[in-house]
Image (cartoon, rainbow, N blue to C red; front, side):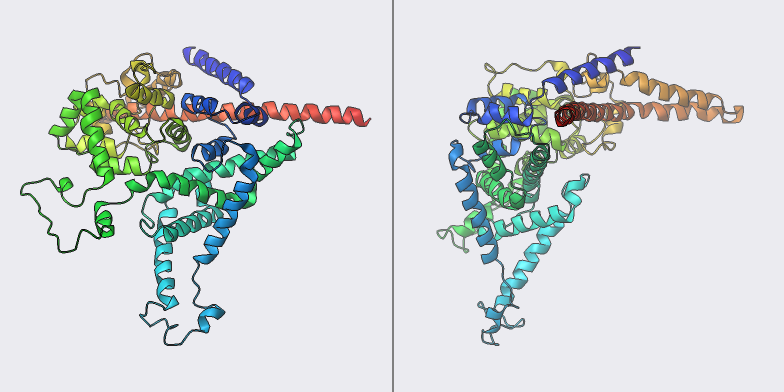
Length: 529
C-alpha cells in the first residue's frame, strides 16, 4: 500500500510539473524577451530549471560569449562565425591528389620524399591525427544511440580535427571529444524541438523579427559550425588544463634542452615529471579547500597516499563528464557555466564529490578509495549535490542540503553495473550517509523499492526451502548469496524508478501538447465548415 501511495504521489508531482513546465515560446520570452536577462539565466541554471529546456544551447552560447547580449547582432555574428568555419575547414584540408599538387616538382610531390614542402608529409600526418581522433570518437557515450550515428561521428571528427590543426600549440588531446559531445548533444536536440514546433505553427504568436532570429540560431544546416564555435570558446577556458609542463617548457626559449632534471631520492612517482597548471590546481584544491572543509578526510587520503592527480586530472579535464549520466551532467554544466566567474565552481564541485562519498572513503584502504574515485558511485539527487558545492563555496549565501539528501548509489557505477567495491559495502556494518540503502528518510525515488525487492527475495527463499532434503545443506548458502545481492538490486531498482519517472514526465508533457494540437485541429475543422 505504501508503494502504491508513493507511486501516486510521484505521479501527482509529475503532473504538476508537466502542467507548469514552460513551453519553448514562454522560455524564449522569459530569457530573451525585450532584452537578455542574465540574472534570470544564472538563477535558473543554478536552480536546475533548465532541465528539459529547449533554449539551453542559446543560453550556453551567451554564457560562453559566442553570442552577445544584444539580440539584433545575433544573425550577423552567426553568419560570420559559420563562414569562418567553412573557410578554415577548406584551408586546412591537404590533398596531394589535387591539380595544384600535381603541378609541383615530382621530386617534391612524392609520397617517398621527406622534404618539408612535400604535401604528402602533411597528408600522412593529418591521417594519423584523424585516426587518433576517430578512435576516441567511437568510444564517446557508447550507451547513447545519437553518438553511434555516422553523421554525429563525422561532425565530431571534423570539429576536433580542425581545432587541433588550428591550435598546434595544444593540438588534439584525449578527452577533448568528451567536452565536445555534450555541446553537440544540446545543439542537436534544441534544433529538433524548434523544427517540431515550426511544423506545428507553434510560433504564430511570436513577432516575425523574433522568429527570424530563432530560425537563424536554430538552423539545422549549421550544427557542426555552431558546435565548433561553442567548443572553441569553451576550450579557451580549459586549454591550460590540457597543456602539460613539458609542452610549456618546449615553448619557452629561455629553457634549453641542456637543462638537467633533478629527481629527489625516495620521492613519489606522482611527484616526478613536469608540473602543469592543472597539477597545481589539484594540489591547491586538496590542500587549501578540502583540508579546511574536512580535515579528517584530507588526512585520511594523505595517509593512504591517494594523490589528487591520480583521479582528479580526468575529473577536471572532462568537467566531470564520466562521473554523471548525461542529463545530470548537463545540469552540472549549467551551474559551472553560469556561476561567476566562469569555472570558479569547478574546485568546489570537486570537493563536493569527495564529500558525497566521504564515509566510503574513510572506511576504505588505498585500493577501495581508488575504485570509488575512478568509478564514482552515481549521485542520487544532483540538485542537492550542486547545492552542496555552492554551500562549500559560499556557506552564508547557500544553505547546506540535509544529510539524507547527500547520498550515492554505493553499489553500482554510472553505467548501472555492479561496483567493484560492492562486496566491501555489503560487508560494512557501519551506517554510512554515502550508502542510501542503509539510511532512513531517503529520496522519494527510493521509497517503495524495499517492498519490490523483498518480494523477489521472499520468492527466492521459498523456492530454496522447497527443495529436497538432500539439498537442505545448500539452502542457507544460497540464501546468503541472494542476501548479498539485495543492496545491488535495490540500487538498480531505484535507478530504473528514476528513469521511469523521467519517461513518465516526458510522456505527460507530450500528452499535453498532443491535446493542444487536437484542440487546434478541431477549431480549424469547425471554422472550415
